[in-house]
Image (cartoon, rainbow, N blue to C red):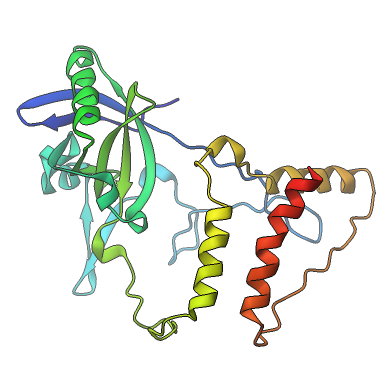
Length: 261
């Protein structure tokens, strides 16, 4: 793994030097974009809008448009905006993780202690475990401020989860949602029974991205000249359905599955 951020975690007056690594991989197949006429690769080029000529990456700068002209920004300008946050993730408060709604969670990163950071690194893990708290703060990564939390992972390492800022969450007021009308008691009772019947401890190892696997199977079939059978998927008709009948059928379905297995 390649470190994508070097810095430190600020924990009171304690600084823990760390390296940050992406904790996730994309499970999608690496598909190329091709011209449908001759199956040649499509190349994306950085082109000057005025001259039409390609621009090398080393000649590209970033700018902000003000009063019809661009102000060009250099690396030191980004760092000057908040120099301490480019190198330190300072924990500003400790909270219970369950207080943070899942809508705020974005992406996880592994944190690795650098030289002389091992002892405070282990100390923070143990302190967070004992208090059942997570540390929340901000830092700057890739020229953008990020809100994040730090928590123990697998009892042995620290993981950082990037969070969305409140202003990044869209307002849901324009959605057409049901009015605040209570469901029928019998329907609610059955829905609760269905939830209880399907309740279990979360076991992430039981879930697997199978779409890419099945898609690769189709690709191999096509490579051998085989025809892929088209599967018709029934769409929801939108008609009013008997909710009680659906709930009853749902409650019976798991029982049938268990007997078959």
